[in-house]
Length: 65
Image (tube, rainbow, N blue to C red; front, top):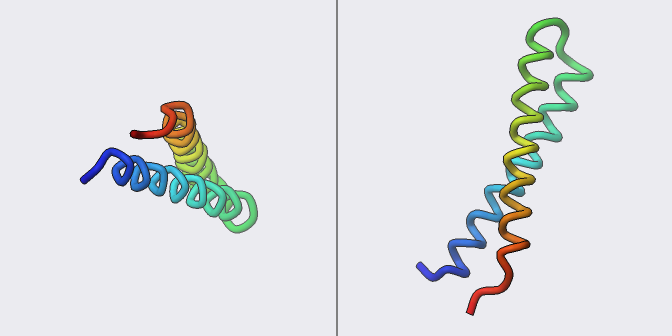
């Protein structure tokens, strides 16, 4: 597997984490109550941070040759 293809799959993982974060935040704010809402929100924000770090890494690492 080439470096370019590997970076593509890693960026897809970051994008999926971002979409999961949005869905979990909406679920936590509108459907859940109490401690379950807090746990879901924590997981959502953790997914958002990890996904953001992945995307920033891929973008700043530049093009492959």
